[in-house]
Image 1 (cartoon, rainbow, N blue to C red):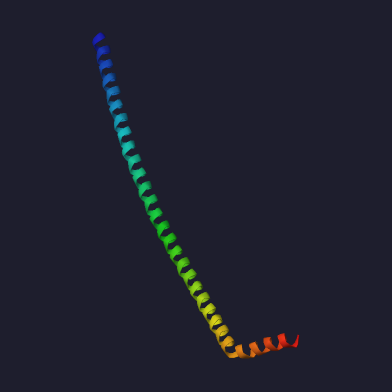
Image 2: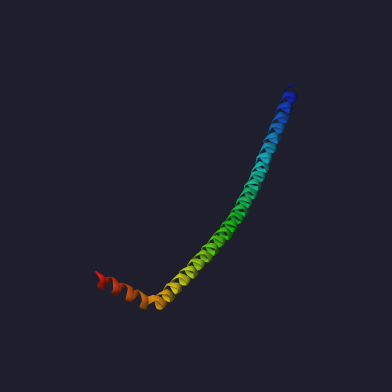
Length: 107
């Protein structure tokens, strides 16, 4: 009976050893799958960051272009106003001098 018990213990030991190897293999597979998931997540994050940066750069470019257009429109408007003031001054300076002189004299 001791041989049968020893044989039973040997078989149980082999089963336990085999189960341990299976658990170790399962842990390794789990690590590989986890690493794969982490890489996919990192790749997705990098892709998302790239898309976000591109959209942000596009938006910033559009804002700069709009601001530049508005500044140019303001410059143009200011130039027109300045030119009109210059024309008015050139056309009316003599009249204004006479009016100022007349108002000084009449006082």
